[in-house]
Length: 393
Image (cartoon, rainbow, N blue to C red):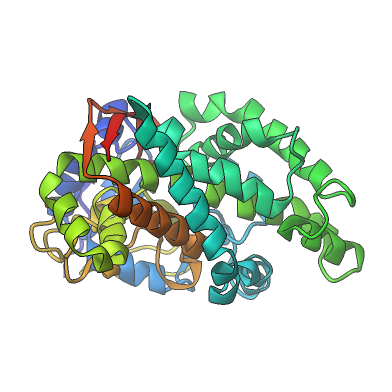
């Protein structure tokens, strides 16, 4: 058993690491199963096995005290399914997940596919477009507000900014986080108003929650956090995954040809995209008791950063982890959506949109040409800022 925890000056929240995190992830994995980040006073877990085991053990690796790296901000984000444990988590998650069951997703599948087909047709007709603004953001901004019943003329233009600020606040208290404070206040005010009866479209998912609160079935104080549970996870992470889809397929024409030759690989290919370019850098957990991570004891009360993006490239688990392969046999084991009881509640919706867009691309596009990418500077989201793309029919 290793009793000494390595200490490192690696800072996964530095601009350089955010731009290209994979060398730092490799160094962290090489230092041991758990490493102390000197810059932030927390422990980091970067290997696949240890991250997966921690995500399965919610009693020891607790989310109830927040999943960010800054305690002050963790306290401010109490009440959502993301920052809770059973039994509260079970109740809150159930209110959200009932709209994301396989049956509920099947009910909107044809609508989503029609939308995806139309979007790809429009993009083919252009001389070029941006993977983020014109492709990655198109679905979340078109579909998610409609499902939630947001007013057409209010809030929609700010949804992406609000979601970005919410995720930034799960990182350290740096300039990126602090720049988002006014946006978080704005989002809180908006969600508070949307929690009042009559402000959301009748028949929508959001209006149903508000009606249940009015009937006493849901605590009215939970409504803003519940509406936020629908909002943030369905925005930034989806945008990142969809933009990365064009980036990876455009830079790996051999894999694009394999997918075109065998469209049955689409679900596996989407898992591989999520594995190689995981939208979430990682979340933290608070140890409720002493724990052994790998072969190393870590004291209770410690905050531990679980690095999903690193785990998904761990050479101890993945063969040729930096290679993109649409037919990778174990791609479905990726941890981009988390694992255990806190696995992303919106992953079914993310998969629906990802698969629909891939089907539309395979049916209509011969080649995907991409230009020089610019990567986004964000504390928690790994994603592109811009990427020029041209589709050839």
